[in-house]
Amino acid sequence: MLADNLSTCSFIEAVQKTFDGKHPCCLCKAIAAGKKSEQKKEFTVQLQKFEFPLVKENLALIGPSDYQLVLQADTFADSLPQKPPTPPPRSIFA
Image 1: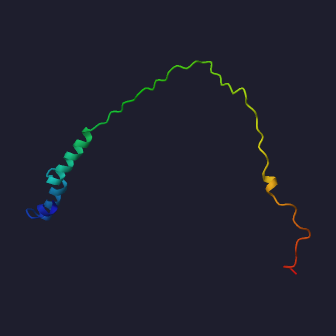
Image 2: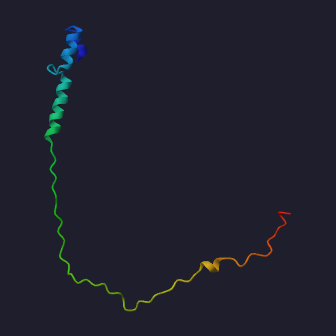
């Protein structure tokens, strides 16, 4: 826009015309129209209320009648090797 104004006016007048806002170019008009259309779009938020069915207040959890507690075997101790050989071999360090 400044280049277009320079072809018809002096430098000072061209700069003033370009930035005063009273002489918008096609691009400025398109940007202004886009801003107006963006401002017109307003989104409405619709809140929904959740409804839950009524539940009896006396709620009881009952376990099965044939319940038995099963102890887990300690398999870690069985996987360990027996005592290390004594005395430890020292032929490497001698």
